[in-house]
Length: 231
Ligand code: NAD
Image (cartoon, rainbow, N blue to C red; front, side):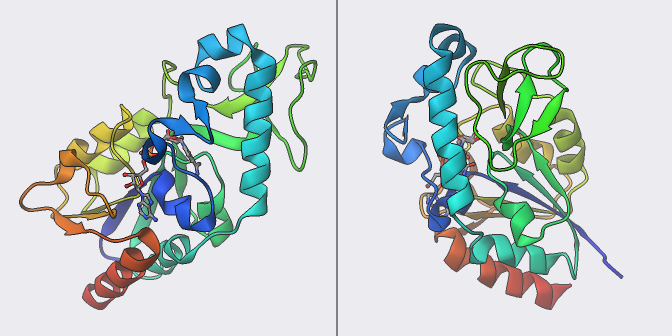
């Protein structure tokens, strides 16, 4: 019987060793772009072509990489625990590795969204989005990602998950983006909190939290082995 519930909060760092760039590490730039030029509603209003081009490139990056040992370790955990992954990542590497319960807080880059009806989503398959590509209602398609300054509809579901966690694992996130970062404090009933990151974020650098100052591919498989032994 699966006894305890593990909630994993993952960020861009878990996909770094697959070859996808994080952005905090590079002085707030994401693949050479200031995030406010490409990942805000204002950027979309000012230069939708640039925004589409940026996400078309990121989508190609995602398609060209594979899940790594850290994504795979989390799949293994499902054999022993009830596992929910709350990811800030817009890539699909958790799903491709085989994780069965993934909440995408900031959307999914492989989907497009109608600008007229936000819940009208379209799987892109191997396509890009170009200016002039329209949803069935006739409005321009945009990437299905949450931009800075936009609301995060999945946060309520994620908050309920975090509140019910027995164990919380925080991996590859700078905890600089809210409301995602607040999920750590929402996990009040967790008896154990683990953080896997070569640079431990200040917000979780405190007594009582297990700090694993390593990359995801090295720290996470070992943590999973330890948790399996305790299950
Ligand atoms: P972030 O870029 O702010 O921080 C990355 C964190 O990962 C840092 O704390 C860094 O120390 C850590 N890190 C770097 N290499 C690591 C490794 N090998 N193993 C473990 N940790 C490592 O990322 P964030 O906190 O997720 O916030 C970024 C936002 O940018 C999110 O909203 C996300 O949607 C978006 N983003 C997504 C992707 C993706 O989907 N792969 C990539 C870049 C940015």
